[in-house]
Length: 63
Image (tube, rainbow, N blue to C red; front, side, top):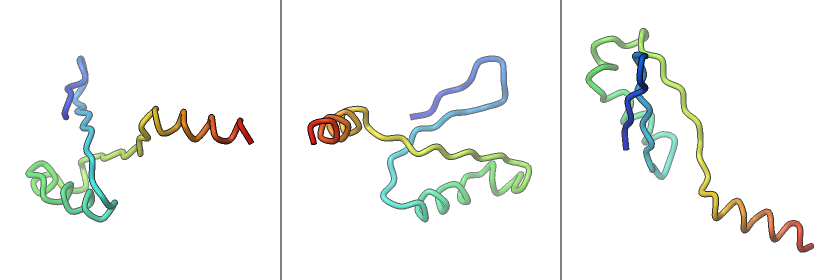
């Protein structure tokens, strides 16, 4: 899923990949990366499903 940030040259993409290595490969194959290389800034933030977080938190509080 991709979203364009209004008023800025920034795109946010949410991807589900099994490994960080695969994400690296995907990013390196993007046309913008091949054309602009080092001038493209990439920031990666790992996300966790809220349901999994809540279940983990509940299990820890119930100890």
